[in-house]
Amino acid sequence: EKPSQAIRAYESCRKTLDWLKNDMQLMTSEISDIAETLDNELDEVKEEVERVQAERKAKHEFEHPPVPEGFTSIEDLQASLNLGEYGDRITDYTGNIGDAFSEIADGAVDLYTHDLLKWLPDNYEWLEEADFQGLLEGCKGDLIKMTQMAQYECFTQDMYSHQEDIAKYAALEGLAAEGVYALADEVYDDVFDGITIDFNDNNMDIEDFATEAQTAIQ
Image (tube, rainbow, N blue to C red; front, side, top):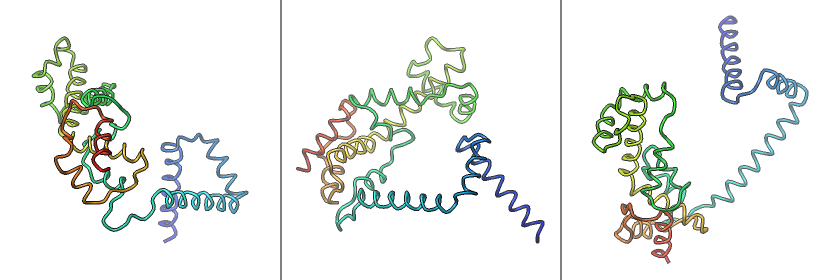
């Protein structure tokens, strides 16, 4: 029993140390300083942690008041949408939604050879699609650049296939920025799931989706 307890204790300590070094990126000297502080001032540290936790809880409750029956919070509405792999980045952009998709896809393309070659075996069809779209002109024979073009096409098409929900997400973000916390379910169904706004219009500016939604719910 005692040897097994010692092994479990060792493994737990090792995992904690790995977390501090790898996830928190702390140096050995910094970890030693933390250990010394906890040894000398454990009660004070606990009190400070509890104070911070209480402040965060109060802030969360203030920012997330109870939603009346028949309403759904903007946050929950956004969480229910299927944005694909990169659609949540849309809120960092303004202007034409198609241009934003291109910029997001370009920024998501891997730069390192290892990552590109790891991605390629399961995604050869995107090389063919990139070639069909004419994206491989000038880089045929350069596998790395070809794979980057394939990724770009893959990520772009992923966003277009989720455009309706991505545009809704952007519109909801715009409403939240104007102080809207929740929407009546019937209003959401009418404005966002009806025919009021064409969320698949890839000629629209991102901010216009929010403007049209705002106009529709007034």
